[in-house]
Structure formats: C-alpha cells, structure tokens
Length: 166
Image (cartoon, rainbow, N blue to C red):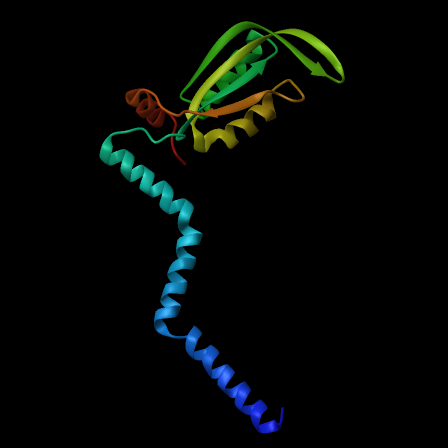
C-alpha cells in the first residue's frame, strides 16, 4: 500500500469505529444491557419478592432448616441457647439420643448424639454456621442447611419476625 491509501484506510476505519460505537442509540443500548447483566440477581430477587407480596405466596428458599449434631444433650442445650440469644434462629428443636455411624480417621465409629434442627432465614446461614463452628466441641461439626421450598405462611412470617434481617 502506498502512503495515500494507508492514510485513507486509517482515517476511514477510525471514523467508522468512532461513529458506530459512540452513536447515542448504540451507547444507550450497550449501557442498558451491561446494567441488566450486572443487576440481574438483585432484580430477580426484587421481582420474586414483589410477586410474593402481591399474590400472598411463599418465596421459595427465603428460609432454611439447619441440622447440627452434638455429642450430648448438655452441649446441644448450650449451643441452642447461644444460637437463640444471638437471634440467629427462630426455633431450635433438640432430639436426644440419635444413633450414628461415621468414618473418622479411616475407621467406622459408633456414637450416640443429640440432633438439633434450627429454623432461620437463609441470609443467616453463613453467620450461624461460622458461629456453631466456633463454639462446637467437635473438630468438624456437622452443620447442614436445606432451603425451605414451601410451608405455612403464618409460620414463615413468624420466623421473619423472630430473626431480624440485617
């Protein structure tokens, strides 16, 4: 290519890129798509909450049930009381004497444990898990959570009232 053709190519190519990208319509559409992608999780959650409020239905996954095993009834009561005092759960059920078998350090172990079942907001799961791990006597405590798919709306409202949303 000679110098004039190269100059013309660079000039036309640069003007074409500048005109196509910086057109107001293209820029607004691009910005709208970018904001939609970034805000999708918040917009989806807001839409589900609005739907739930307008129809009186339950928003699946807003609450969770947590299962925690403890070595004995006293440890279970102490952990339950500490959870309740911090308002990390609305309710903790204590089921004494559950029999369990598990692998620990390569061997099968038999034990009697006490099972806790706590009901809370899903948004509290990580704080509750971290708290239980910090006070539990086991090196590796069992803390499992399950989202609630559906249930009694008055009961779910009671959970919301009992466990503040931070």
